[in-house]
Image 1 (cartoon, rainbow, N blue to C red):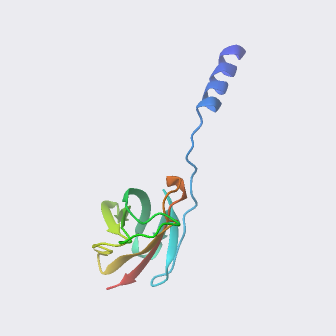
Image 2 (cartoon, helix red, strand yellow):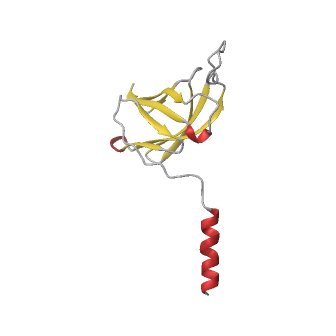
Image 3 (cartoon, rainbow, N blue to C red):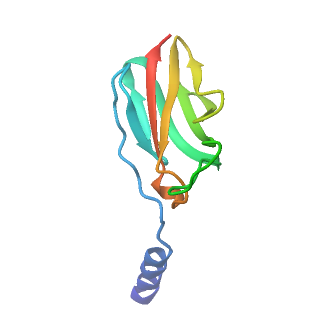
Amino acid sequence: MRLTLATVVLAVMACGTSSTVQPRVQPRLEQAFTLSLDQTAEFPDLQLTITFRSVPSDSRCPRNVQCVWEGSAEVGLEVTVRDEVRRVVLNTGLEPREAVVGSHRLVLRGLSPEPPLDPREYVATLEFRPR
């Protein structure tokens, strides 16, 4: 029994996960806030959460390169309002840069750092404000 339990424990430890649970943030309305990948902002009074899920594409100009066009990155967000989940994609250089969520607007202010980068380094700057 001890050998089996030790084997299971070692197997679980070896598998591990590379993702880490990001702490939730509680920003104020009309104030810019940042989210790392898989991090969630919550607005308890509105029963609303915003989670930064992905960057489906990033054609922004790489660091230390002079480009004719700045490019654009897509930011995938998951917005939950009272248990209703909605996927939202906003862009840094193209439209849409904002989305209407109920009586509020969710605005993408930026994405850092510039490419090339490890995708786990992405940080989105957002703002949630009344319409």
